[in-house]
Image 1: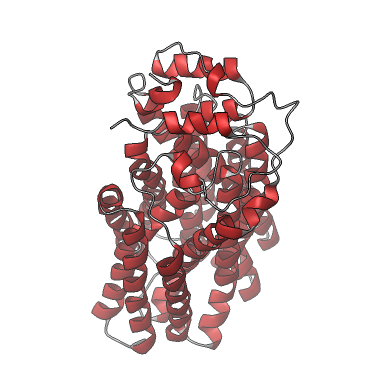
Image 2: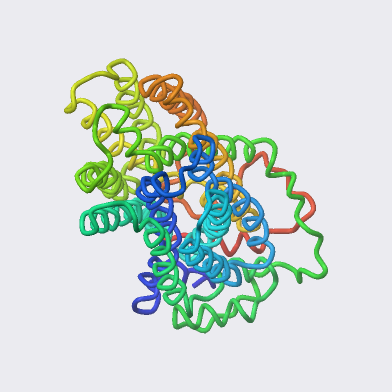
Length: 469
């Protein structure tokens, strides 16, 4: 048996379940934090009276924070390791959420939302890289795709909590407590993550053979000699030239992943942040528990759409789950543009259709960046794709209230349709199929130059992790 066949064999009882919950805790928090602000904004407007520009910044601040957090900490995660980083970021998030209770001015809320976003952005490349590198090949798509379901579930939870609080209290006065409720969830995730070890792949890539062997014995119950699959001592080998990932096929992959992420996240974040306002623009009341119930149903359909995609992504493959739904997502957005004054049933049906169909691409934005890049660049690539998407989402979220007030709700929906159509074209021509392939197979490109680093023995590790036929 090759040394790392063990990565595709059953781990000790409960490990993968705990790993999945721990790593999906970050996306769940993101969905909750990004959605709870949409509920809280009604109370913020009533008590803090932000200007239109300040309201846009409150919605966009966390997205700007995610841009910086994902970019900076994705790079650091590839350098210092996954396990060291993925508790510290959530501690920062918890502190910032608690401080939301004391907000008195719009700028204070903007600053805290930025810090919260930076912590969430840091967690994306940390948690998803760790999950990807521990997951068996045959389950990788579904398990990593669960991050999207967790994100959507967090969004639904936020609207359920918001509807309950608004319904019980009869108003929007408790928006500070709604924002601070994210701290409780953050503490729970921190506790769940205790005991999750460092990725053996990352340890071997960085020459820490004994540590990798200890993790394998701890998780898989087998004592193995991994000295034959390690790279040279990191102190003696030259550093990888990171520039090779910004040209050729790797650059094309970065563009494709970023375009997919951008098209899924930009309309979705604007929808979650300003859904009550958007519904009001279509003459549907979004203030009060009844409006929140409608919003919860719409967001819940994202979860409903993600669940069948988790099964189909391993049966049909990644490419169909990306391309076909993107084409279909253009239709309801274009319909909302063409028939902006349509009846209630049409408006609600269009939003519901978009939410359900987006479930497929929403899982691919987590899977593709983690699969298409090697261990030494994986977290960095996830960080870059996340940063690009959040830059677009921040811009869209900031501009959305301005667009709605000056151009109207229908024209605003047109912008989302165009963005989705562009992503469809890019993915149609550039998205690869990675179903059933080992991480080494899908993360390597034939045209990529091998300069500045030596990886043959690490490739033995990836090849050994592929299932035997």
